[in-house]
Image (cartoon, rainbow, N blue to C red):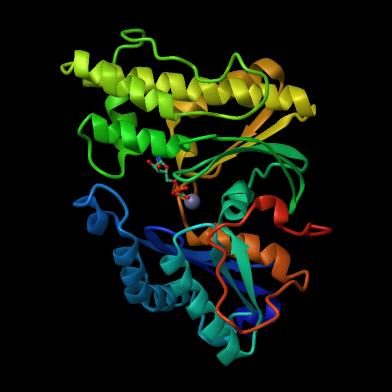
Length: 345
Ligand code: KG4
Ligand code: ZN
């Protein structure tokens, strides 16, 4: 008997930015296989993502990656029960590739396809781990495009408590890294440089912490880094350290405030910047102080991946949710608050 007869197998397709990623999630056995192809080398020489190059590479990579992931799980296309694809938010041309492949497979195989919200994928990624957070919780989503605090009552029942008014924190890491002459993508490189910096050599501001509310602003930190670098060009590691401390403490202070405000005792942290070890140290220490449990995805599922899209799709597809037409469908701008609640997960 094939795997598919024993449960529901979701194929997840992620193509919203600069990673082509595929995951296969089984309703009884969990994650079966996943793989990604990073476009870092393609965009590095331009210092950032070039949308047209991203789209073209997703076209080259998506189908071979689906084949590779199926082979890894010892399955064939016929074993797939449903297809989840990232419909947004993201780069329109890049999203079109994943959607077109998903809808073509759905039509030809006669199985459902479902548009998945990229940030819901990130938000649910910690549920791929054995030690899973329990609902309800507060989620901090920190990626290259978003910085959000969300009250999560259940899957799909999201209230945005606060978000960045300007740069996302990942974007601020990337831009500051660029100022310091580090390559793209800058976040991990800046974090690495900061490990060699001296704490307290420079004091950067903690933006918006003295204002009430849970919104963020990170563009000022980047400007502060630029001005400090102009005056002290020989102290790159110290500047990286001061930036990282200011950014992570600001996130920690707002998370503590969100937990107090909502009365929740579980914090879920996800998105590319949740890979940052200084951020994890800050948040874990805060969690201990306020008696909150803090959950993260494993490192490889912090940044974009296909497993999180397969998982988010699995929860909804197995409840019967699916796209109602075979038309290619993307939502480059899409609020988490528009998603319907998924019941009985
Ligand atoms: O979630 P993600 O892979 O893509 C988006 O949905 O945006 O996040 C990518 C972001 C980039 O800005 C990258 O620099 C940042 O996450 N990032 C980090 C680290 N790893 C990735 N920032 C700080 N420290 C890290 N270790
Ligand atoms: Zn992402």
